[in-house]
Image (cartoon, rainbow, N blue to C red):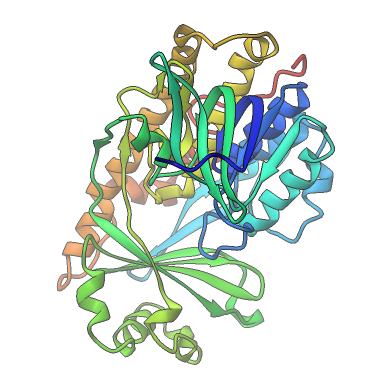
Length: 410
């Protein structure tokens, strides 16, 4: 038998997961006067190689909440043009300067700064409750309705009794598993090795993706360092890591020779983190008393760094649709939860389709093409000839297929 709880909390809504989706939703609900508990399993937000991209659509949300200027006081880098180098050709891909948003750029900011910012401002509301080091291990269920969660904390067992549980605990969601939801695997041909290298002023400012036959390296300007992603075929990491890390250093230098003087900063495989790429989605996001959003409902490809954008827009849509009911009493109807999925499922599927196109038409071909000279596909050459085309991927990446705005009445 499970031990009696050492602590019990009661809230209108319990959000599992203190990532971007969970924190944005918790902030919005607390702002509306709804008793909200966020449970996060870690002691802090300080984890490397999480998504650090803040999209123009997210900055529009910050603007809706009158937090835009305060938010951009945090250290960050701004990118208005994203380019890629394919072979010896530099290809401008996405120009954000024409977006119909206040922020006409991508911002790169450590995710822990973003989440700490939300936690700090959320704590100003008496209905905002963030519990760190609370690892959810089960759901509380009665009569076929989810009534809350059970978590382990350093002090013992914690029960959070709630009229609605939100699963925002990522692609390895405990909530999703405990609810019996089964994902549909869409597939991904690659994984990514993440690491950092120091950046020099002579390197230039522009973030770039470098592609040559059989190899892809992404460099993201993070001020004093480059955040680097070396793309490998799915499942190839174990074989690579059986060899000396010098193999990775050589591959990096073959793609970007100017990094030869600092690849020694990768001293061992311990300095490299593996991102196992998963692209999946739930056929059904909800059951009575429970709703999954963000990566818990649909894991996105890292292509375009769009996953955070989609997750945050899920959170805003959830707040817009459910806040009126959450201000009342009783269980939230399954019909209302279905409205969230109906609104967000289309944009999610369209985004995944775009990512799959790039994975299959570009990334897979580059990784498989180890010997031949890499040439630009015809549809990519158009981005050089017709600069206005760069506005299309900028809109998809920066805003999304169905941007969500905070309803000021909430």
